[in-house]
Length: 633
Ligand code: ADP
Image 1 (cartoon, rainbow, N blue to C red):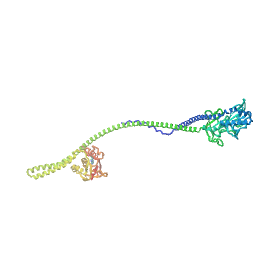
Image 2 (image 1 turned 120 degrees about the vertical axis):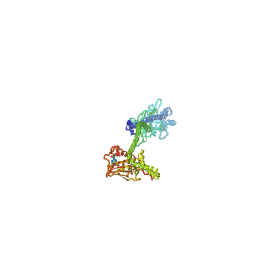
Image 3 (image 1 turned 180 degrees about the vertical axis):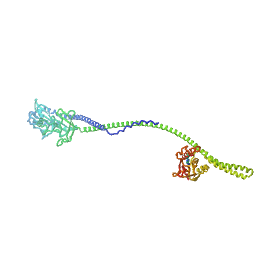
Image 4 (image 1 turned 90 degrees about the vertical axis):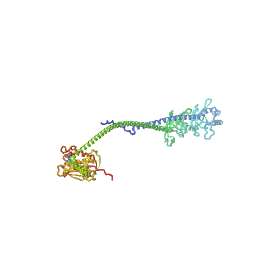
């Protein structure tokens, strides 16, 4: 019965390699890039918002400073018309004493309030008196300033407010003018020039490049000297003519600002890019880059304050934040990837473990089944072995019985010869004992003694005949021992002696004691020899020349060969010589068991028995026997 073949274990999933998926890689890079750009944009937006807020505060601060500077003295000209000396001068302009008095008043007032200059003009725009009357090279007195806008405003009865560059020293200033009225009529104009030098010191408040453009869009003040007197936008023709006429900026021509600036950048501001190579002289090279421009109008003066916030730090920071966001995203994605990979590996391991356990369980059940089958087979084999041993024992017993039966059969056949052997000494003993009685009656004791001695010798002789028979007939188990082949041959020949002699067979025994020592049971060997010698005798029954040759020789492989050759009829053609019950002898003479039993006995010793015809006629039986192990000398 064969054990059922268990189902093969499910195959393990193929191990997945870590080859990067190009699509996944592209998506990964895209996501990292997008988040990097997003981070950059968000950070830039935040930075710009902060810049806007900061710029707004700074602009407020600076506007307050400008307001403080320009409005501090703005009311002064209005008070000048109240002065008696000034009014007197207006009425009598050619009075040297009047001019002197007005000059002194204006000088005192100017020194008192700390303005650049205060002066009054007549209706034609000629300066009649000035605070700097006694400053050579600066004195306005007598100058015709009718071209100035502030004069025209004052003459028109309005308050004039104008930036202008001084005609005398070319010093920029803020001019405020008011009309001088005498009895309701405008008789002249009073003007104060306020220094804007303080503003130049205030630029640092802004901490960034900044400028002030007047109502014409011309930069009148700037923390960057090169920007001064440039137009934020190209000036229209009429403005250019007016500027030239009123000599506002005292410049031959007004250049253009490095980049066009919107009139009102609005709360968001305007982003401008200053080129590195702005002009052949590279005056603005230091400001190359991007700037966020914020502006604020200065209401009272009609100016516009612009501040240029450098975008470089914002962008650098945004770049850092963008890179950080990209790196962080990449890291998080990689982390997620690693976690996913680990999870997959753990799943694979669990799967593999489960499969392994399944395979293990299957193997165990298979082993258990096989073990059960083996145990059953083992038990069956043991049983068979026991049965065979039993059969072998039975066979051996039967064989022993058979051997014994064969022995007894031989003995039976020998009985006639033995009887003959015993009959002679028995008859002699009978005669001698009868004579001894007679001699004893006659008192011839010496003869009685002589007869008894002969009787005793004869009894010994009979004993010697019977003892080998007893030994041969004994039922003994085969016990191998060192056996001298010459002794065994002699014992067999002794039992058959009578028979051979009677048949007229010439015996040639070439076995010498000590010549060949075999490892076998002598009793059994004798039985074989008796069988072979007896068969040889039978085969030579009808031969003229009857010769039995027994000799022993060692073989090359160390075994011994004992041959029994006769000059008989030779072997029958039929090859079934060693088959049980094969006999050519008439019924009652042969059983056909002798050779079969003999070969069995010899094979039991580890030897063999074979037969052949001799070339010169007759048969030869060769006994091959193992040699006895050499005794240690
Ligand atoms: P049995 O002697 O009872 O016939 P054996 O087994 O001893 O049984 O012998 C079987 C036969 O082998 C004999 O009948 C005889 O034909 C043949 N045989 C045995 N020995 C010889 C021999 N020496 N020469 C010729 N034939 C022999």
